[in-house]
Image (cartoon, rainbow, N blue to C red):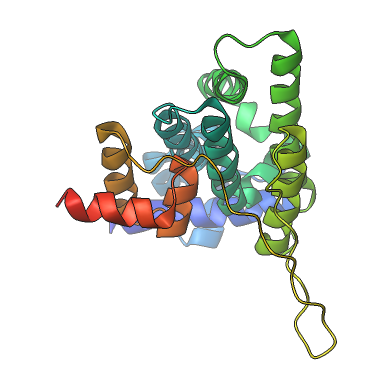
Length: 248
């Protein structure tokens, strides 16, 4: 019952914050919508800041997992692409929360969360650029980071798949990848056939022990599909299946 109450508080808070903004919503309003007393809500979350911290934790944890797994990818270009695709999938799942942050910077209300978000953003840009990158490469990595985050927030109400394709296309162009992702083509008798998607080159056929462990953890937790896990790790679906089967 306690876990259920906590989950309902978080779900209702997310809805209210998205509708009216973090600053406009009171703890009493949250309690009324959940069907609890204000004291009961404060038992689970001593302040509204604590609610925001709990809401943002899955976003940060999933994002940090992507970056940690990508560090095991040997090829720098494929490592950067694993970060790009993995983070985009995470942010699309949590886009309501990111839209809330755009409205009133609510995710920065808690200092610890703000520092963690800031440090994570810097870590992502380093992972994209590479540890020995020059100034131009670091600037390009910052541009890629903005290409990923800003459209997710601005177009949060759009369907996920075409939004994902458009964002990846822009990121691929910035990174100089030839395999940019075309947007989905409308179906129907008059629709043109989709252009062929060039095969990915240089994707590693072997996974390290750390990558396998990260893949097993994401699979067992049910936080990502096989396709999403493969994208995050920068390997093919077949490579992922083979290593997961062999590791049993």
